[in-house]
Amino acid sequence: MHDASSRILTQCPLCSEKYGDTDIRLIEDLGTSRLFHCACASCGNAMLAVVLEASGMVSSVGMVTDQSAADAERFREMPPIGPDFCIAAHGDLEERSFALCQAVLRP
Image 1 (cartoon, rainbow, N blue to C red):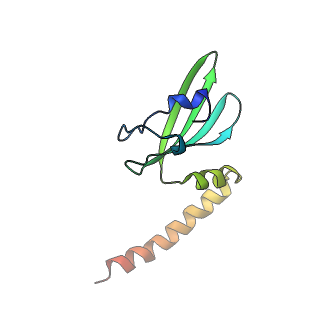
Image 2: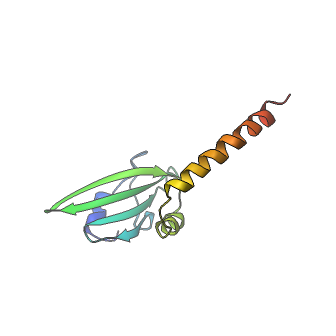
């Protein structure tokens, strides 16, 4: 593991198998908070975990993901998605979903 804060990440939250040293990868270090990618060799699931250190206390929050560690690193470097993009994506999905439903439901 990478440092003392990663010691909190000892086992997969889904199957309880212990992580190996190569299963946990530090994605971003912001001093008091760190982002880790954890991949379970046993069940094949992965999670992103944020570990926070403050006043001698350590806490974490995790989210199951289908991202690889490389994906997490790549997405970390991308700019945030803005509201204009979200509105345009919603319009595209709404416009194309009707055609998709028709194609799927054709006899």
